[in-house]
Structures are given as C-alpha cells and as structure tokens.
Length: 149
Image (cartoon, rainbow, N blue to C red):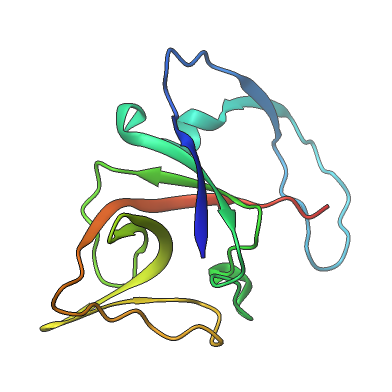
C-alpha cells in the first residue's frame, strides 16, 4: 500500500478552530431509539483527534493492504490517516513507515528481535526487512476517517 504525498499536510499550520455540531445523544446502531432530551454541543475535530498539533499530519491511503474483515482494524482505500510524529511506536501500532525511501502504512510487529510490518489484508505477506534495507518509522496513526459514500 502506498500513500499519496502532496507533501504531508500539517494538522496545525496556522489552523483555525472549526467547531462542528455534535449531538448530545448517541446514534443507535441496533434498534432505533427516540432522541431523548438531546442537546447540541460543538467540538473542534482538531481538539478531539490531534494531541500534538505541530507533529500531526494527514495522509490519503491508496490501496487495499490495510482492509480487514474486522471493521475496527480496516482502513479502506481513500481513507484519511491522522499521523502523530511525536508518539513512539510500539508493538501492534499502525504506523507510517519509510522503507528504502518509500512510504507505507502497516501494523508494527515488534517482539524480541523480530521486527515486521504487517498488512491487515491476508493477501499481502508481512514485510520483514533484510540486512541491506533501511526502515524509519515516520509516525503513528492515531485515527482515520473513511467516507462510506
């Protein structure tokens, strides 16, 4: 899976707050329920999803290597990644990595001496780096936004 770079767009490049309405009631994903005494508040998505504004960037995903049968782990083609460079990557994080100068997004496998980048889509084999390859973890994916239509 590759990432489109235009170059990476910082989350806070003189960013102005954009407060969007958030309903004070949850939406039922099971049986419909009446909206009881809901109140409206406003939230800035940067405040909700960006912990380190100066170190946070957005990427657009291209490809299907991170598409999974588990919805909570599935990142579809065209999704927008929110990537924080201030975080230290740990085992099982989704990361943006640079391998020999090429960007990719994968799940980090780091156990003992074994290091690999794992795709969510089982069609793609794990990336295990060879002796001559260069790997840099560019940042940790903290959230993603996908358009259902």
